[in-house]
Length: 330
Image (spheres, rainbow, N blue to C red):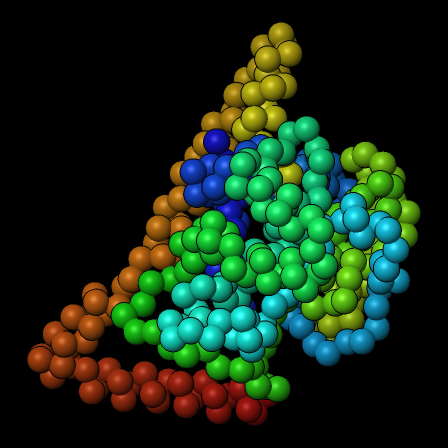
């Protein structure tokens, strides 16, 4: 069964949001699908959609899309503030590295959890781990929930299991003004209203009423389009994903209630495609996590031994300088 994962969200990595149910630590019935446009056709093919996650290049923007919720609706909305390393260090004064206890680059994980922990659809089962975490944090404020999320053993284990393996450990540096910084926000429907859940804000943002049921996404689309339009002209560094009901399970359920041979054949083809896609994602995740540095080091040693390394380096350097020169002329 294809499920969703909690991923390592380094700002400039690829985002593969699918993996087996074992790695999802008990979350069942959900998967993440990428949306290529805001057309109705794209959304209709993925119904039911339980939440949207928008990835974009972050820029300083104090304008809010709506009003921050400050009333008793907070009791029904799971919202956690994103916790930074400096805040975590205040809580861990012993000698062992703070990194061993907390989750780094967690905005993607937090965006996924913001959807899951606010989803009450019958298709989605959080499993015992997330149910226990949700109940444990129920009475906490947003800051304490963020801290609890960052220090959850289960969530950290899944999150960190998808980080790239390297020979060396590097200290994380603060992003400079010239660096591209990416961020995730979630959009979820709760009791007939649409909310934006952004861990960098002080609370859930009420975006207004939305339809109850599958068509709630119609209220989210113009808001997402407005956020896209805020980017500079020609900017393509954004991505829209939907947390949906597991497609294989959905197709199998539809197939059980169909008698028409052509429709049965169509649904079986869709089921087989989901199985192939799941296997492909698993292979991609293995390759992404694999540590290729030993292989690279051996190749460099062989090239150096054969006297080919320096000439190849010089050639690559010339190409890079030429490319940079052409870029500056444009």
